[in-house]
Amino acid sequence: MARVICVAQQKGGAGKTTLVVQLATAFAEAGRRVAMVDTDPQASLAGWAALRERAAGRVAELPLSAVGGWRLGVELERVRRAADLVLVDTPPHAEAEARTAVREADLVLVPSQPSPLDLWASRGTLELAAREGRAVRLLLNRVPARGRSIAEAEAAMAEAGMAALESRLGNRQAFVRAIARGLGVVESEPRSRAAAESRALAAEIAALLG
Image (cartoon, rainbow, N blue to C red; front, side, top):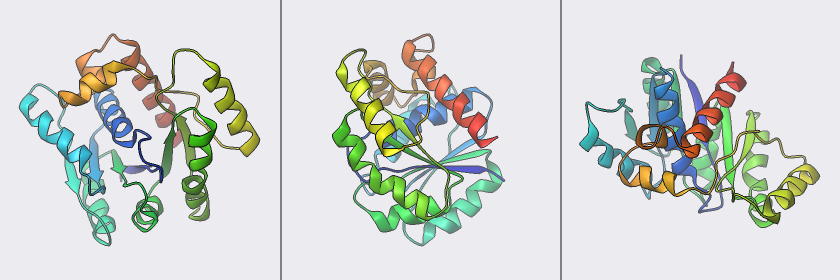
């Protein structure tokens, strides 16, 4: 039975869909059978999947379902039978939808940009996962190459007792270019720093899930 990874963040603009894409393609590269579920009405993940159809036959197949509400549990039960990992993209500002996805998850990932304000805004999602008894980790996303924001973010996480992944995703145009082509960076720019970050993140999560 597949393990379910829910990517959730009540604050918009945190990069949830980008994270799902990079993890899905990195896990597929590592030989995992991956399925994706888009519960966000904005359907950004579904839009990426539509672009990916142009490369069909040349890239890994990543089945996608677009569902929400009470249907999510039923759909997850279906896709888990044919996958090793299921990645769920959730909408911002929708606690009811996020709660349903979180309840079904083996691991909840909460992406946040490295600023105290963004980290403070992540508390609601972290607390939701904790209330549901789910394993949860914060991921610093869109991390700049240098600057005070990284140290400030680390201090804010330590003060709040937030459990964070060691891996981080940088603020790199390679991620943007890959998304625009319906690809992940491990496919579009496999030797880039962005691809190395994606692989390291997937490996850390795989180890965490056992």
